[in-house]
Image (cartoon, rainbow, N blue to C red; front, side, top):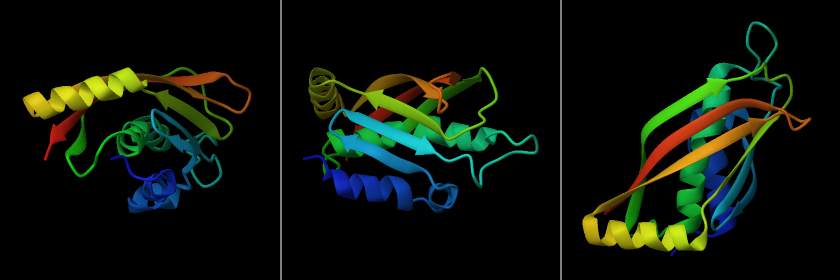
Length: 147
């Protein structure tokens, strides 16, 4: 059974010290859907835009948040297999990202992981500034493994 949304929100924001220091916020956490925000304040680089590491963190974390809000963490564990991030323009405001998996995808992944011991899924995401402009594109390959 997936973890309760409030617990996933807390784990997303506080479990990893680096993420907690960054101020990342989980604005939406529900089965199959997360929206996260990385603040510009405190995460600027030498040019005043959002630091590349903060953008990478914002792009990578949705896979874990989706896992814990959608999959049975008593039966499965998540991991990142590969990740790419393409920067399009400077990020000069807080940046948000949304990720989704539909109910059929979640069920198929759990079934596959149960039968084969593991299953993979990709997330292609857009990181957007406060005006809705895409500042970066990411693609992550995630795996869930049977415990």
